[in-house]
Length: 80
Image 1 (cartoon, helix red, strand yellow):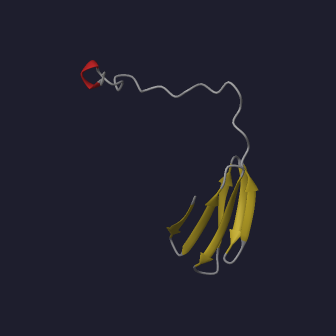
Image 2 (cartoon, one colour; image 1 turned 135 degrees about the horizontal axis):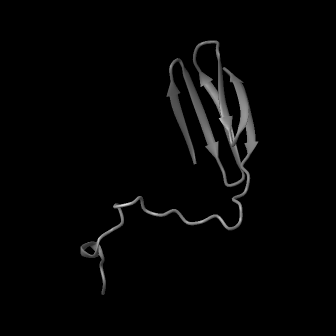
């Protein structure tokens, strides 16, 4: 998956794979962008590129649930 995000004067391009993410500032003013990647502080300058590992999911992670009052009702179930 790859996409670009325009923020202020910068274009940040992300290239995401299962085990890593690449960050690159493609254009913009001569500035730097500070952000967090899975809790790690990162600072990137225009023209810079960095690839960081994506940590694996922890075993036993519970499946998400619907917020209170937002679960699908009986009228929306489709049965054959």
